[in-house]
Image (cartoon, rainbow, N blue to C red; front, side, top):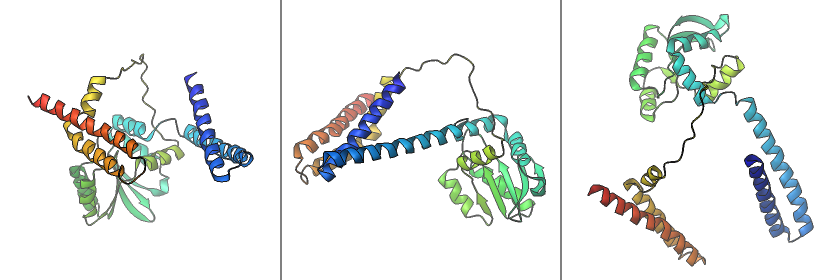
Length: 254
C-alpha cells in the first residue's frame, strides 16, 4: 500500500510539474496537455528502463560483494578471480597474488578485499612482490583506497591500478562468479531512530560555522532579490541553529 501511494504521489507531482511548465511556456491548455502526455510517457519509459536495469544487477550490490569477498579471505578471493581467467591467460597463482597476461604483458594482481580500504603498507607489499617477479604492472582489488595512498602509489616506478567495485562486480557477473549475498536468517529487528543522537549530530560544535555561513549567504541574498522577507526568514533558521549549537557546546564544556 505504501509503495502504491508513493507511485501515485510521484506520478501526480511529475504531471503537475510538466503541465505547469508547459502552460507557462505555451500559454495554451491544449498544447500543455499534449506536452504533459508526451513528457509523462517519456519519464515513465525512462523510469521503467532504470528499474529493469536495477533488477538485472540487484542480486548483490558492489558493497555487499566486497563484504562477502572480505569474509572469504584474500587467498580464496584470489582463487576465485584466477579461475575466471582462460587457461591461455593464466601464469601462476600464489595467493593472495596471481600473475596473468593482459594485453600481452604479465600483470600482478593482489586480492585485498577487507572491511576497510587499502593501506600504504599493503601497497608496499604488492610493490615488493612485483619487483621480485620483475613485473611492471600491479592491479590491487580492494574496497577502496584513500587519496593519500593513491598519491603514494602514483609516485612509484611501476604502474598500479585500483579497479572500482562496480567494474569488478560487472566482471564477476559476466563470469558467473559473484559470491553469495550475506543473508541473515534470523528475524530482523526494527531499528528505531535515536532522536537524541540525531540532535547531537545536527547540533554539534563542528556545524556552527556552516550554519553561520549558510545564514549569512541567505541574508545577503535578501538584498539582491525582491523576495526579501523570504530570504530573511530562511536565513533566520540556520542562524538560530548556530545559536542552539553554540549553547549545547558551552553546556557540554561546562
